[in-house]
Image 1: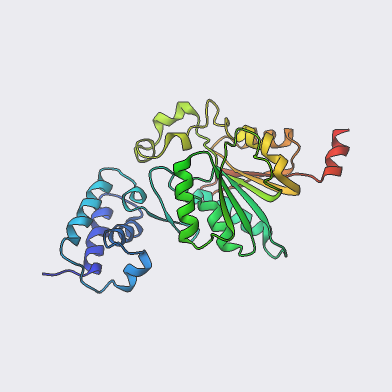
Image 2 (image 1 turned 45 degrees about the vertical axis):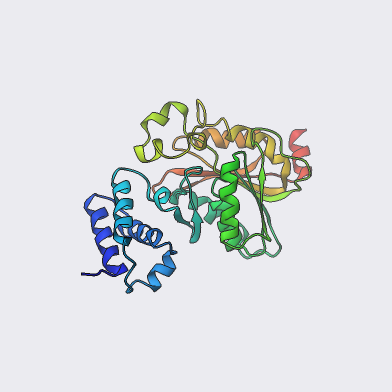
Length: 296
């Protein structure tokens, strides 16, 4: 008996649920949409239609890969962050809900303000944070920075996917070095750098450890090998009263707050993720006059 997209979606959701996958409904939508070469919105529109022959096998093959432990984002190439559709490949990390804490804080920071903020997103990966901010703040200009050309290629495709080409630029740069010349000044720096201590990589969940790019996870001995130079070197491209936001790992908040304070940032604090972990450390760069007074 022929099955509709909806029938196959229900079967897929059941298989994932029975395997203990918590987000079985969302993942089933991604799998069925990818197998159909449709967006999730297109799939929902066509949900009552009958797919072409061979479709069921494509779905089953994807389900088998998922049940073997491969993350659904890498299987389908589809993901969503803060409501923004993204292409995801194994060259970049899969965006996590925890990172939405930083996106939400950035959006709140500029809520109700006039002007056109310039935003710099370091260690951009897929471009999820920068693209989300550009979508939510139509007057903003965003620069995405990564040192991996493969990640930057994903960034550029996500910029194009969301029709942000006129306001979002991608730049190759190493954030452990001084910023490139002529970048200008920014109102906000966001950064989701690698922050997992090297010794803890082996203990990560296999879906992360075995599939996601190690270079985007490994933060060195204490997890701060990338965060440290970002705080020290990239403050030079912040405007007076500009803000920096850094995503961090569990137990790193005190050290990163101290790092920002030591580098002249004021109003240093932390924001918690939904699980209660301090996930984002932020600080404000005082105006030049204020910095001169405190230095004296």
